[in-house]
Length: 164
Image (tube, rainbow, N blue to C red):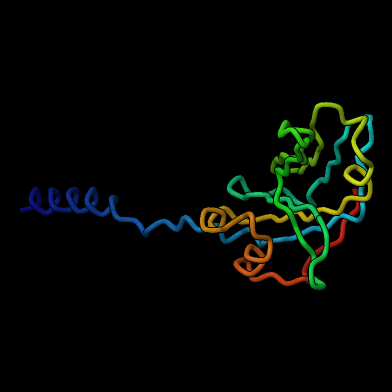
């Protein structure tokens, strides 16, 4: 009888070890954040600007960058990067682009001859940097800044002004 009880106890131990609570793959640690640069200028030394985040991002977080391109009916127009501009013949002139790590984001110009670029495209540019939890990133239309803000339940008074 002792052997049967011992055998049942061993079987129960192994069978219960396989039980676990379901895992939750939702990123609950990241709070969506929007940063807006004060007017920044791309200078010939590097044609790049870099912002270090106040705290390290989670590995699943995404970063989206938008450039202020104008105003329509009193509303700011934000263009999603990368943003490419072309010559009249259809060849690429230059692009605004960016890359990011868990620590920082770098926004830069790239093109054929940036030294001849009109200063309207290199001086006094304003960008918005949106940190998006990875769980939201797959369902967002990232090209639509207003839609991204609505999906993340963020409003204009939550945008943090930053210096580069």
